[in-house]
Image (cartoon, rainbow, N blue to C red):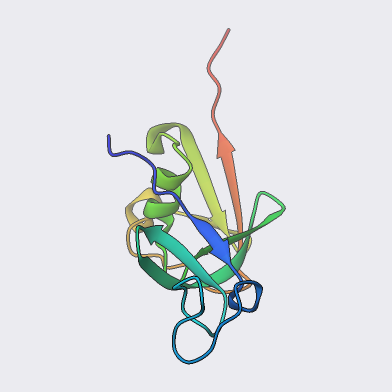
Length: 109
């Protein structure tokens, strides 16, 4: 299993600067998310289990599951109050304002 992707939300006005890059070498403009060293992508605000999160724009549900360190076999995902079939996790892209609910299945007796 790949290591979860590290994301850091950055507001460009917090780092100052001028031109296309700020003083700290961060892009100016809308909110961005750092996905790897020096690699910033636009982000969107998505609600995940009732909590706001800044995620890379067009992140798939499958990528979100990996980022959260969850096992796909033991969860159910709902996007905007619609249960998502597991086969659609890779093709369902999250957009600004989406509401995602993830439920874990717990075994026992």
